[in-house]
Length: 123
Image (cartoon, rainbow, N blue to C red; front, side):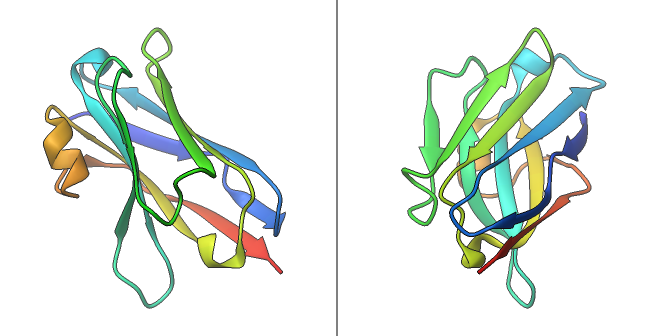
């Protein structure tokens, strides 16, 4: 498995922006598809965005499409989630995930998870 560490969470007002980062180690990062998931209080964890190993394919949930952008820098072993036009309903713990299969990222069944970073959007 690959080890994942998220950063960049925090408190932001509605309409604001945040950029999350996820640093990977332990395996060849460019072999892995990556994803961002989130879990709001009292709710199940849900898929937010995914990216293929070389970045040529991205996939978003309907709830974040057009506002969030996932990207990766394989030279830095890092994946990012740029979050714009944030809403109170985006408040959640955000998790980074990795899997050798992009399909498993899309189906929310990745092999490796980070510990999560809290994002809180105030109204």
